[in-house]
Length: 337
Image (cartoon, rainbow, N blue to C red; front, side):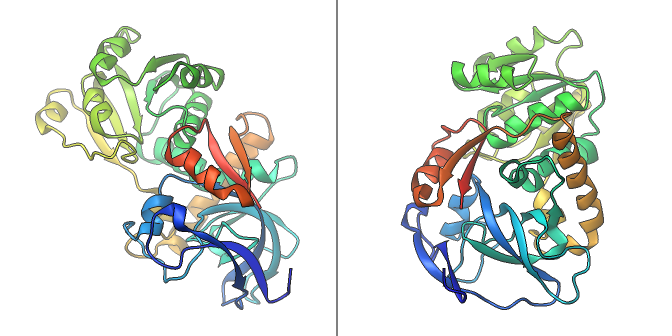
């Protein structure tokens, strides 16, 4: 590799994700507060399709390299960066740029990786597991002994939610679309796994819950499953709306919230790491850094199982993205750079 460029996946215009191209990318200098990372692994997320088509709430300047979560080693730090140093193994939550051999990013959302934690596992933690941990701890206030219903339990967020919910002391009921995915959820720590069938969901969940339903719902799917979730919650339950992988944004009958004392909680982790309409990452950096450190130590110490990963080399990026977009993935799809 030449010193002034590196290989990466490039979006030159708003397009379908299959139209991205591997290209040489000119290396750019560091600005104050930034670090340069040699990327070893980068996670593939479902939002990629929105990002490269220009339909996401944030639009990077074209051309750009997608990829919002990565891990590797620091090559270089700006003079004003003191928390990090060259040679450190790190994971990062990125604005974009992860699907490349190098990335330049703000130091505020870069996190040291402890000894004993593989970089591939670390790459999945700041965004995917950070979303789950923060949603359950900060917003849903999940308590030991409660029952949590997790939709999309074989996907990246769902897999993490099953693991973190169990670590926090909850009994987890998982939903997934196939028998293989439900078996994977059980191996991952779910107490029960049920089909993601909106028509039968309420009856199947209530049969497992003497209190009348789930105390917390973790929902990255939306659509019909969200509608069904309103009917299988216990009084006083909290419903976390994380995303809409089904493609339909549900509408909520407010009378159900009133009658059952339900709390509907929207959670946008991006707000805390600089992806919101205003960049609030510096304000929340200490809070997020603490959460990511807790997650990493839990995995490194064996309290939390390592993320379930499906690996693809960078040259097979097309297959990697297709596996994610077609919802065939069990766990997190990871590009090995």
